[in-house]
Image (cartoon, rainbow, N blue to C red):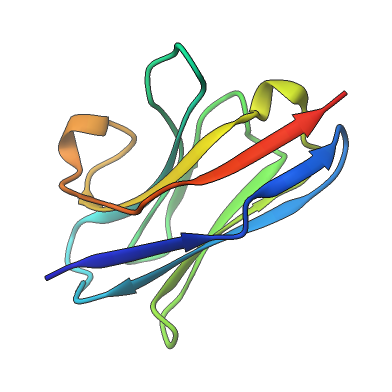
Length: 120
Protein backbone atom coordinates (compact mmCIF):
# COMPACT_ATOMS: atom_id res chain seq x y z
CA UNK A 1 0.00 0.00 0.00
CA UNK A 2 1.33 3.40 -1.00
CA UNK A 3 1.81 5.94 1.77
CA UNK A 4 2.89 9.54 1.19
CA UNK A 5 3.82 11.65 4.21
CA UNK A 6 4.16 15.36 3.54
CA UNK A 7 6.04 17.89 5.65
CA UNK A 8 7.80 21.24 5.49
CA UNK A 9 4.99 23.75 5.22
CA UNK A 10 4.84 26.91 7.27
CA UNK A 11 4.43 30.66 7.24
CA UNK A 12 6.89 32.99 5.51
CA UNK A 13 7.00 36.54 4.26
CA UNK A 14 6.85 37.41 0.60
CA UNK A 15 10.18 36.66 -1.05
CA UNK A 16 11.02 33.90 1.38
CA UNK A 17 11.71 30.22 0.79
CA UNK A 18 10.39 26.87 1.97
CA UNK A 19 11.17 23.27 1.11
CA UNK A 20 8.44 20.66 1.15
CA UNK A 21 9.16 16.96 1.53
CA UNK A 22 7.08 13.92 0.70
CA UNK A 23 8.34 10.59 2.01
CA UNK A 24 7.00 7.70 -0.04
CA UNK A 25 6.65 4.11 1.07
CA UNK A 26 5.21 1.20 -0.83
CA UNK A 27 5.62 3.06 -4.11
CA UNK A 28 7.74 1.87 -7.03
CA UNK A 29 8.54 4.14 -9.93
CA UNK A 30 7.52 2.81 -13.29
CA UNK A 31 6.54 5.01 -16.19
CA UNK A 32 4.42 7.18 -13.95
CA UNK A 33 5.14 10.51 -12.31
CA UNK A 34 5.20 12.09 -8.92
CA UNK A 35 3.89 15.61 -8.54
CA UNK A 36 3.00 18.51 -6.30
CA UNK A 37 -0.44 20.08 -6.35
CA UNK A 38 -1.94 22.90 -4.34
CA UNK A 39 -5.37 24.09 -3.38
CA UNK A 40 -6.26 27.54 -2.11
CA UNK A 41 -9.52 28.16 -0.22
CA UNK A 42 -12.46 28.31 -2.61
CA UNK A 43 -10.37 27.21 -5.57
CA UNK A 44 -9.84 23.96 -7.41
CA UNK A 45 -6.75 21.87 -6.86
CA UNK A 46 -4.09 22.78 -9.40
CA UNK A 47 -0.86 21.19 -10.55
CA UNK A 48 2.40 22.84 -9.56
CA UNK A 49 5.23 20.57 -10.70
CA UNK A 50 5.81 17.01 -11.80
CA UNK A 51 8.80 14.70 -12.24
CA UNK A 52 9.07 11.33 -13.91
CA UNK A 53 11.30 8.37 -13.08
CA UNK A 54 13.88 9.60 -15.58
CA UNK A 55 14.15 12.97 -13.87
CA UNK A 56 12.28 15.01 -16.45
CA UNK A 57 10.36 17.87 -14.88
CA UNK A 58 7.48 20.13 -15.80
CA UNK A 59 6.19 23.23 -14.04
CA UNK A 60 3.06 25.32 -14.18
CA UNK A 61 3.63 28.79 -15.57
CA UNK A 62 2.81 30.34 -12.22
CA UNK A 63 5.82 28.77 -10.48
CA UNK A 64 8.31 28.29 -13.30
CA UNK A 65 11.69 29.74 -12.41
CA UNK A 66 10.84 29.93 -8.68
CA UNK A 67 10.08 26.32 -7.68
CA UNK A 68 12.20 23.22 -8.18
CA UNK A 69 10.93 19.65 -7.93
CA UNK A 70 13.38 16.83 -7.20
CA UNK A 71 13.45 13.25 -5.98
CA UNK A 72 15.96 11.42 -3.82
CA UNK A 73 15.97 7.83 -5.05
CA UNK A 74 17.79 6.52 -1.97
CA UNK A 75 15.39 8.09 0.51
CA UNK A 76 12.42 7.71 -1.87
CA UNK A 77 11.46 11.25 -1.01
CA UNK A 78 10.00 13.94 -3.24
CA UNK A 79 10.93 17.58 -2.65
CA UNK A 80 9.64 20.96 -3.70
CA UNK A 81 12.03 23.85 -3.18
CA UNK A 82 10.04 27.07 -3.26
CA UNK A 83 11.89 30.37 -3.63
CA UNK A 84 10.70 33.94 -4.12
CA UNK A 85 7.36 33.04 -2.59
CA UNK A 86 4.39 35.29 -3.23
CA UNK A 87 1.12 35.71 -1.31
CA UNK A 88 -0.68 34.01 -4.19
CA UNK A 89 1.33 30.85 -3.44
CA UNK A 90 -0.65 30.48 -0.21
CA UNK A 91 -2.42 27.11 -0.31
CA UNK A 92 -2.50 23.58 1.00
CA UNK A 93 0.17 21.64 -0.86
CA UNK A 94 -0.22 17.95 -1.69
CA UNK A 95 2.16 15.42 -3.12
CA UNK A 96 0.83 12.73 -5.40
CA UNK A 97 2.22 9.61 -7.04
CA UNK A 98 1.39 7.24 -9.84
CA UNK A 99 -0.12 9.63 -12.32
CA UNK A 100 0.80 11.50 -15.43
CA UNK A 101 1.54 15.18 -15.85
CA UNK A 102 -0.42 17.69 -13.79
CA UNK A 103 -3.90 16.25 -14.20
CA UNK A 104 -5.52 15.75 -10.79
CA UNK A 105 -7.75 12.87 -11.85
CA UNK A 106 -4.79 10.84 -13.15
CA UNK A 107 -3.31 10.43 -9.64
CA UNK A 108 -4.57 7.77 -7.24
CA UNK A 109 -2.11 8.21 -4.37
CA UNK A 110 -2.11 11.41 -2.30
CA UNK A 111 -0.32 12.73 0.74
CA UNK A 112 -2.14 14.44 3.59
CA UNK A 113 -1.22 17.99 2.61
CA UNK A 114 0.86 20.69 4.25
CA UNK A 115 -0.13 24.36 4.60
CA UNK A 116 1.97 27.11 3.06
CA UNK A 117 1.11 30.69 4.01
CA UNK A 118 2.90 33.67 2.47
CA UNK A 119 2.30 37.11 3.92
CA UNK A 120 2.95 40.37 2.13
